Image (cartoon, rainbow, N blue to C red):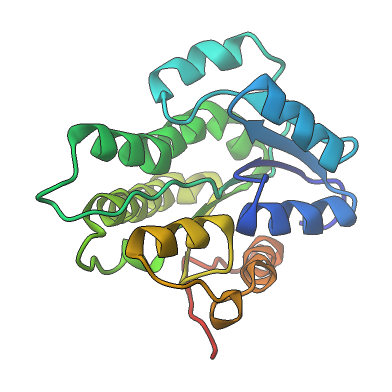
Amino acid sequence: MAGMATHVITGAGSGIGEAVAHRLHARGDDLVLHARDAGRAKELAAAFPGAKTLVGDLADPDKLSWAFSHQPLPERVDSLLHIAGVVDLGPVGDLTPKSWHHQLNVNLVAPAELTRHFLPQLRAARGHVLFVNSGAGLAAHADWSAYAASKHGLKALADALRNEEHGNGVRVTSVYPGRTASPMQVKVHQQEGKAYDAARWIDPESVATTVLTALDLPRDAEVTDLTVRPGR
């Protein structure tokens, strides 16, 4: 995907998303960065000069279509990168429907809705949809039920989409990082009541490298599922 490709990215404000956005921005690609509100959009536009922004609340996927109808959408989309995510730990005995809905909306329903919106552009460009999933998308541990359910669902979304769009030339990749040194990981450690040591976990730049590898692969191949684990 060399040259002036256009990437729509969620989660570009921190962690893996920020690392991916910086790498693509540095090589001269066009970015359309999703933001939950106008204030966040201004921050992203300042951090990535020349990038466009797209405002909509992933926690309220029902309203995304309305929000996008009032904004200019990119005519070309070479890749749609779903990197935003939320996590709220707790045992099944404690998690409320509000917590379930929030994680399912942001981590699963909103990515499905964004994909629906940009599929015509992705088909036209023979583009790429990439989901940053999680190790929790493959195995669910105690206290991780709602988050893992949303990420297991995201794997199902990716797998079905891949089978549906293969004939249209749209590639679909799921990346399953282990624990990554990011603001989300800080929050997880707080919820777990554990001390946080960034050096123990994957550098977001390393995950960004795997994402770009999948995007830049020649057209004769497709990375379908990629698991990335801490190396130390």
